[in-house]
Length: 348
Image (cartoon, rainbow, N blue to C red; front, side, top):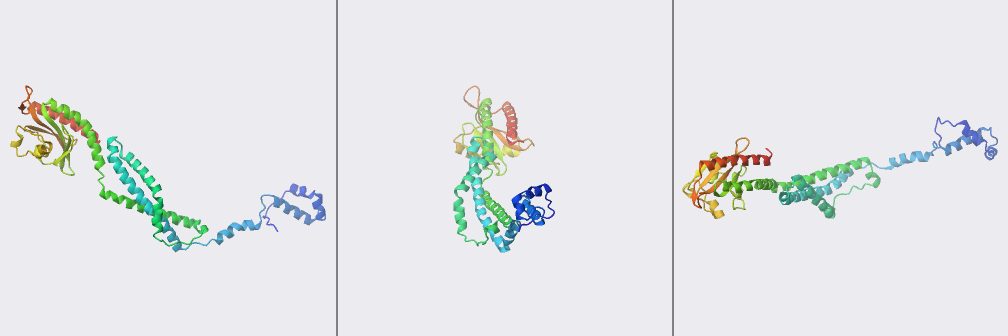
């Protein structure tokens, strides 16, 4: 009737406690009968922890044997159905994060000097919000694909093999989606934010130098030009009475010649020199007479820019004058300080 574990020892005290029961003894025809003792043993085991019916022992085994193993085709379909939605979520997540992060980095990131990682963190916030709000849309698009169904039962889905295939399918899908979302990088100017941040840092440093520099040599206008080797241009947004950015070819004009040769150029009449580029005067509405340009050298001796002073004014009165050797010495000293500032900003 009951399953009794082998080698199970029942203490004599436990059997004796049952033997002393008179009603039970009368039913078994005496306390010393074999039937009486066997029934005492069974009764003890029934109330102890070692007792368990056969049906309970074999219930889990029979239930596990009843679950049919899924076929390879069903497992592939299961992985496919787990991968396709993750492709959509991964692509949307990366696309929104990159676009929002780049926009933040190039706008308030430059204004408040935020790091690129901080901008990327804000971009991830927008990406998570988009994932929550657009999750139903992605699911609806996946439902329209009419993917094949695996026809697995709940018990089959709970099998370890099924869970492994479902997890692997989801991982492959989200990686594929993220890679697809990153394709927008081919159409983005990823260096724009870095250029704007460096330009702002240089602007804050150079404004004081330019404003004090042109007064030091009694010039009407001072400009710091920086060399953009990638685009083969020289550009400036730090100039006396100038707020907009100017870009010209690196070999154009007096300052271009100074950067190309690495020599100081001092001209008393700009329009009589063939190297002078009048396009800058046309853009700014300024008339240039005398020019002096001093190169700015980097850490390795490479030329990284130039300082340009325009229209020397005599100290005796508001009359045109020419730049002297003493002015050039002061500009060389200023060039050395500018070089140090640029190296600090660039971390070199």
